[in-house]
Amino acid sequence: MKFLFIIRYGNLGGTEKATLDLIRGLRRQGHECAVVITARLKALGPALEAENIQPICLDRRGGTWSTYMAICKLSAEIQPDVFVQVGSRFATTLAAFASNARHKAYICHHHHQGEKSRLNWLANYAIVSRAFDSLIFVSDWLRREAVSLNAAVKTRAHVLYPPVTLKDPTTDATRSSARELLGLPQQAKIIGNAGRLMPVKRFDVFLRVAAKVARQIPQAHFVIAGKGPENEKLLLLAESLGLTDRLTWLPWQENMESFFRSLDILLFNTDLEAFGLMPCEAAAYGIPAVCSIIEGGVPEIMPSRGGDYCLGQHD
View 1 (cartoon, helix red, strand yellow):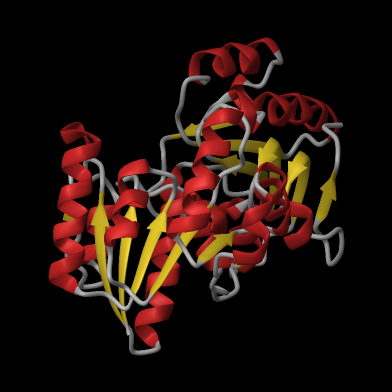
View 2: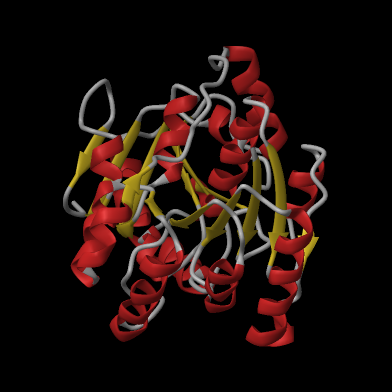
């Protein structure tokens, strides 16, 4: 079958990584996949090219109407069997109505709080429940949230957890190499997390826990990889907690392998998380995880067993 993926953003965050893994899996099964990105092409471009996929980039500055027309034209040229929209964008949904694809799927990775207003989400599901025959959510928590917004979603809703590939076990040699590459202390017990530094991700909780652990475990060292609007605020908090010499800040990591292989424990804190790719990726490398999350699908995927702990509060 021929799949046409319309992806909203061109970076390589959790949504894009999960979509890339889905595309890899489909191609291994013999399906064809074409990819259109409706934004400026960033790290997702080289990642797709490494898979021998040449993405088509539509700069979203063109506006809704021009984007709609461009997607309609591409869909008519490619003639996909399956039209797949990743993320919420009005122009793509309109183009789904016009597509002749036999199947149309809408994939939602994001929770419905904060990014858009409730009215916006109500309008979104009123339209997508008519444009697509399958509405795919990355956790059951997210599916239930969407159904609460529009009951029509229920008959078309499916849960498809993003695929996570198991990695070779980390050895002393690969851990040492990873730590050397990232400039991390070789003999420390390293606790880390990574992601966009924004309020909902609660890196402030990570730092406050780190301060308590640091007082009890002299060999503990902490690492945060990422960037975002909370950078300066978190730097000041770390300094006030006395963590300056016990904490390493890393830039955004396009390839997370060295980061995960350097860790002893992942500490993941968030108020809202539709899926929670970080704990799952850590598990794929055999890294135990401690998670605190107020709402989201992480407990479905990472129950408190086998060395991983998922808490319903920030403690």
